[in-house]
Length: 267
Image (tube, rainbow, N blue to C red; front, side, top):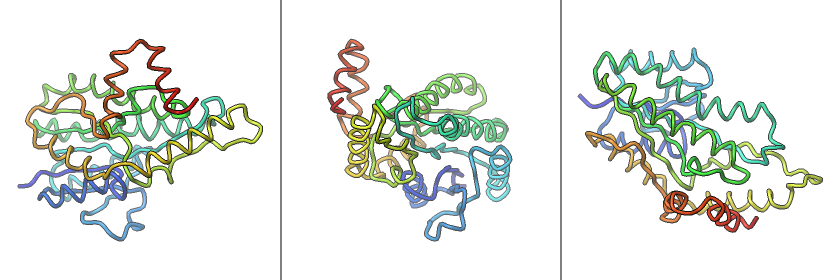
C-alpha cells in the first residue's frame, strides 16, 4: 500500500511540483487549496483548506483520512510572502503572515499527530526558507515567520520521536514560481524615507525569483527525505551562494555579515 501524502498549498508553485513528482513516483497524494474548484489541471486531488481556519484544518485532515485511511506524510508547504519596511507594514498584514506561515503549520501538525501516533509512524516536513536563517532587509517579517518554524521543528521533533513520528525542515532558496505575484508588498510611498532603498530592494528580490531555479529540485529533495529512514533536522535547497550564506553567518562576525548583506542589496 503506497504512502499517503498531504501537501498543503498544492495548487501551484513548489507545492504543485512536489505533488506532481510524488504522484509520478507512485505515492497517494492529496494537495490542498483554499479554492480547489479554481484549479483545473492537477495530477492529484485537491482538498479544500484554509490553514488560518481551525475548522477547515480539521475537515481537511478528516477528509484525507476518510478517503485514504491514513496520513503517512504531512508536507507543510502553504505560505505567504510579505515585504516592506517593518515600520510601514500594517499590523494586520504582519499578523496574517504569522498566521499563515507559523500558526497554520503548527495547527496542521496538531491535527495529524493523533493519527500518526495511532499508527506509530509518520513524517512531517516543514517547508521553511533560507531567508529564515537571517534577517533580510525589507523581508524581516517573512524571515521571522520562517525562522520561527525552523525552531518549532527543532523542539517538536524531540517531543514526538517516542511516537514513531519524524519531523524535519527543508528550506528553499529562490525558485521560479508565482510567489511574488501573491506576496504582500507594503506600498512604495512617495514621501517615505524608505522609498528609494525599499524600491531598489523590491526590484532585486523580484529579479531573484524570476531567475530562480526549477522547483522540481525541491520535489526531488522532498522525495529523498521521504525515502530516508532517519531524516536530518535541516535541509537546504537552492543555489550554492544562497546555501553558503548560511555558513558565512556562522563563521563571520555579526557586523561583517551585516555588511555583506547590505552590499548585496546595495543598501
